[in-house]
Image (cartoon, rainbow over all chains, first blue to last red; front, top):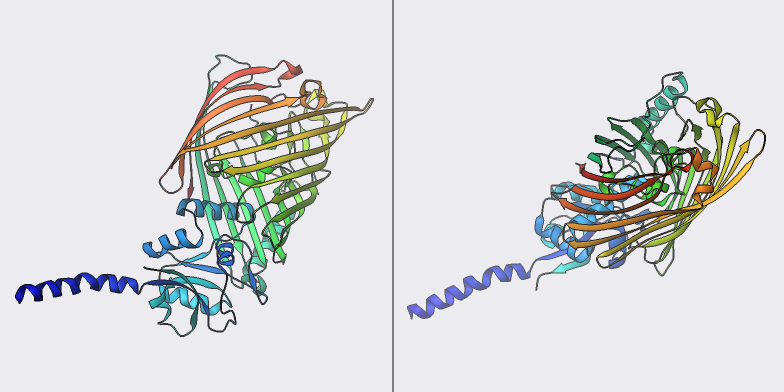
Length: 147
Length: 374
């Protein structure tokens, strides 16, 4: 009986972290005031590579959260589809050539959300759980879901 | 071979007024301050050069050149400002100073001092040494004070537009009109912002590029320039009877990546109308390069470049640019480390035109550390 109980407890403990991970998703958000309710992957990639993408007259400004390593790995792999070094050199090139600013980076989710809220139809990527905690933004695209 | 470029003193009133006006505009205009963003970059490098051909006239035996290029960018909702200043132990100069207005989603109108759109390498890397794989630039892309045969710095207006089509191909257009360099001694000298009354003539420069995929950097294109180059006759006895040069250039370029390979090439046709007081002379030549790069491992790149010129020995124009490199065969290797640092070694067999086409042949080894901060 004790052995069976131990096996059940061990199994539950083993399953718990993966159940939590299965809930993890990365979403693209914009301000709730923006009428945009979805965006194609190509336009997201363009915006983060410094190519002008507009929605109803607003240039879509991309923002990033800089201090979450796992989140950024997902960004480089699934959004811009290039290594961090290649991506950063692409942006550096635009800055040197045209004075084009790089996507603004934030250390704190609250600051990122404030920037998205203040800039109409700007975009940012974040964990779904973080996005759900703020009423001033809305998720418009699921970028990644842990299997 | 290098001619130091020293900032001139003189009447600074016009320049001060322009600078103060710009600072006021950047600092206080509400239109400009909306959603503003600033960036500052420091491109640093230390170059070492060794001539391995023994004692060669007019060629340094060796030298070390530390350099810093500071780039500042300010971006508002529609407004941009960019300034670039270069320091080294051989020269210091304000390289770019321009203010731009975004007139459409993909159109920028710039005013100020900028790099000629008719030179691909120059507008790809500017003074960001870290960004270019090789240490040296191809000779047709050299700066004016390094015996470059074409205008690199122009002061005036430029318009850049990118037309993105529904199939995600793009055509880029750049056009500029401004002040051309002058021929001073044995080099071209760009318009000096600190000496606005120096009498430079007009320059029209143009580039059109086709990009088959807007997300990729692959592109090829056409470049053309019409530069009216005034001559400072008193600066060089050989220029005593030369009043003016009308230089027309037409060139093609390609920058293409396949997997681990990259090909970068440009060829330019030069037509120089040398307006001597007694008997005008015309000459023409072609000069260009092919550079191949191979990413051998994650942070290692092997590269090589061959440069050549055709009909250059008949060019009266090149006769007055003796340090122009008409041939070079080079190989090198680059190691990228840390976030943005590179260590590069280059070996080259080089031929400069020399006085009276005597041709100066020499071998060279260069080692360079380059980086960009932050």
